Length: 119
Length: 109
Image (cartoon, rainbow over all chains, first blue to last red; front, side, top):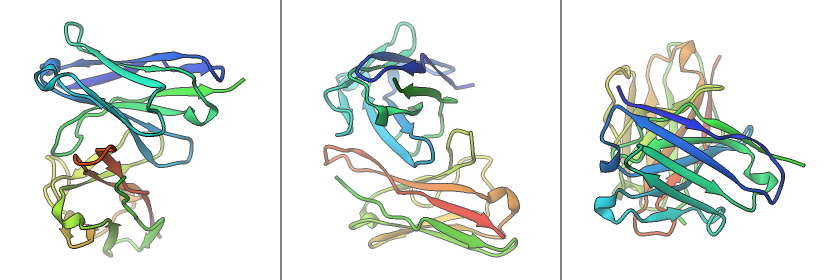
């Protein structure tokens, strides 16, 4: 059974950093790209970024709203994808989800982790 | 970046048909996926590649895609279908390769 579990959310002050983790199980993690998606309170879904599998270079792409501040990485030996968030802003407050970046739709999602950016 | 436009809300009586549109420039040339999201829950994939259903999704959910509009159709609507629905496409040629629609709140009257 495929499972994705996010962790690392919490309350953080503006300008500070936070790292989220997405721990995967039930599939060969290294074979898949992984995406991060967020949802601000009462708002819609927003794609944050993704990381390709090593077979495709392990490269990353980001939404314009986070480019230069957020970094996605992966540790295939631990089946974990990370979202490093720096220079956080109040508008980054959201529930953050990780998903397996399957071309035919995102069937697998984590339960989400809440990040609150506030002083 | 590519923009997907959905109506903010759709209201439908139980047993009737709900149609949710997703507008985008030449969206018919892309594969469209649809997600259902209930309050406090992660999104659930209900239609992928325009018109296919994942296992466990009722046949009442169907999709189509042509020209500048993709449509999610929910037949014989039930109270449990009340949720937010989002369309999604991959736009690999742009600097924003994964795009969600603006979302539609489906209310069952």
